[in-house]
Length: 374
Image 1 (cartoon, rainbow, N blue to C red):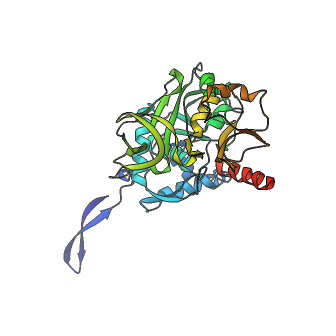
Image 2: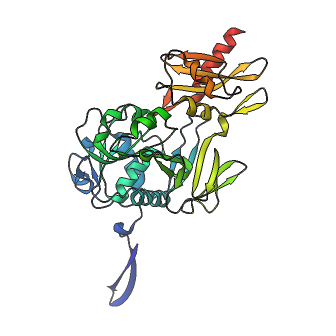
Image 3: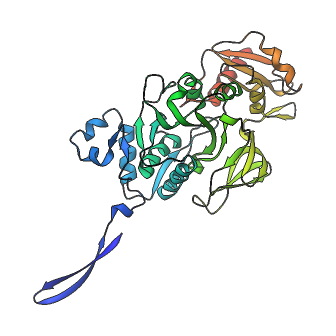
């Protein structure tokens, strides 16, 4: 915003006026002049007669662009609800701009870098890909969200964000991507081993809606096991839980639901989510720790969760999707006696929320099985 000085003469009297001038180039919510959608300059696209036609099958993208361009300084975001009830939060647009710039610096993204948006815009990960395009001047290509977003394209991309489910189904096509980030849920151990030999640089990210996407990363290409903070972010530990200090979002620390081992104020080891802890006979058990150990051996989708038990309250069970591998209990010997699953279940399919296994849905389905046994 600037000021224009001018003079008007009314009935022979000179009057000096100072008029507010809106300079969109200085607006924190304006678009980088080199921002492209599917290879076309957005500034050119917006003036073209085919503007509405371009978005006919991308209504969600158009809706977000219009929301970004309005005069509101905040935007409503929804959490995924994969482990609990979804909720809405308000985020400052200037904080989203700052986050986008941090990502650009971390992954060396420049104006003209070609990126792929293959995540839904329902949640923060997809929205932030668009914001990165707006702010950094990316050539952002939009693909309909699918489990195999690289399968039917011959294009090469500098930067792509995926869920672990998408990564699992894109392993054969990773040569189309220079740098890939994967987040939303933990990456299984067998997938980590598989991608380690890839020419693509792959980072697992840590973040949530409240932190406006990732605040920490670990390089899977070189086998890193601990998350490292991106520039400007620090961490602390409170009663075993991770606290995130992100001054561009909040003056106060963001207390998470994640159990961690703090290595330093910029490095931590993720151990699981407190909301998933199973209380079996008074012993508190972390299912994600068990999943990490068993994930080395099972290359099909599975989860570990609690199941009602008269003696223990809850017992550890193993749930596979679609098929049960031969002799799955063979690998239980690598677990402590308390961690070993007491029963194995098979479900035809897992319900997913944009690539993330919906644990609540699985738990409800198991409860129906339990009630049917009474």
